[in-house]
Amino acid sequence: MSVFSVFARLVEQLADLLQPLFHASAAAAAIVLFTALVRLLVHPLSRAAARGQRARTALQPKIAELRKKHGKNPERLQKAIMELHAEEKVSPLSGCLPGLLQLPAFFLLYHLFSSSTIGGETNGLLSHQLLSAPLGGRWADALGAGGPFGATGLVYLGLFVLVAAVAAFNYRRTRRMTADNPVTLGTGDGEQVPGLGAVTKVMPFMSFFTLVTVAVVPLAAALYVITSTTWSAVERAALYR
Image (cartoon, rainbow, N blue to C red; front, side, top):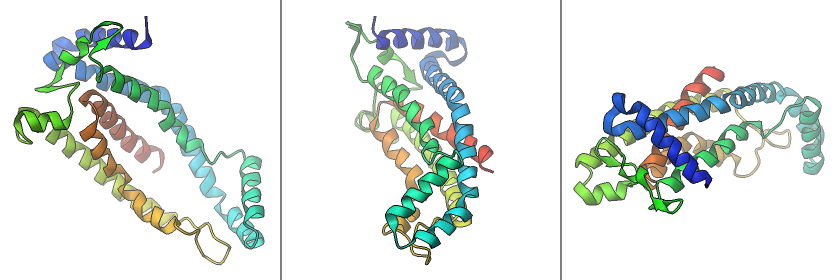
């Protein structure tokens, strides 16, 4: 039995348990609950990433001194900064782990709700819906079925509004954090690495790209993304306050 068959059965069983509360949308609720469980498992890493971010912020004065000392030797500067991180036991990549560990769960849902068969049998998950929107459908299907204000289109419209609200929250928060903690990776003269300024300007808008993801992936995978993104917004607001 494949991992996809096992997971499909678990989703079905969880949907059966939630059916008295959520009726036809029980499978959608099961996906939201599954996402929350994944985020709970990853939460210790998120806390570690927050501690790492605070530690990296505390290292900025020492890094500034290194830039002044080795500003004319980029290779020596990079080596010195890496040595400082190693000495202080601070990983510059620790913040990436929570996101990377969630990718398997996302792709698992994407595969399950993009396949007509699972383990050689008809994929029963595709019969489930969120209100009137099939969990295996996409926004393009909703537009073809009744337009943006049809029954299915309205489900997506509600999801887009939620994603936009979370993205706006993240936008304001990122702008505020960027203003409070400006990043300069230069030679000690206040100059930045070429292109860093552009990256800093674009970063607050990254959350809005979630709208594109929600529009193009199966609705079940979109629910995972929306739930995880909302969780991240609340979690980061609490951990990085």
